[in-house]
Image (cartoon, rainbow, N blue to C red):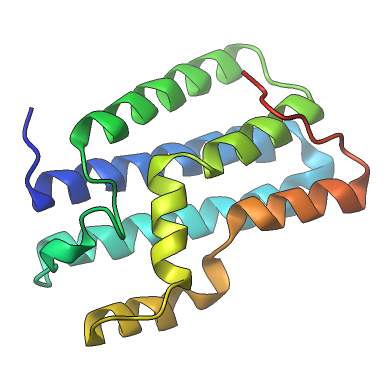
Length: 162
């Protein structure tokens, strides 16, 4: 198992794309909230593009480890495996509205999503961080946005959906 910055960025790209796939399932099956899920899906794909660009075209700073992306590959791989299993389960058996929203809320608190969000809401420490923050300003705080949406729509917020 490799743990270079480039390896972490590549696996983080997969994490964002898996979240997008999960939100696509939610969008297709929970049509009352289709636009909400579709918006998050597009943002996750954009996050993947940003991380891919960092890896392929820019020179990411080693400080991004633990700030923009998790420090350890195992964190990302475990989360990705979990989301892949959810994608399979939810493709075969779509979740209820309550389950989908609470699962999204839970996943947005986990390693890649939470680390990405924290980085994008922190004070930039470099020109690259400032540019990334400017590019993603409207695409952050998914967990907060999901929670707010749930409260507005009367969807119960559970502590731990697992």
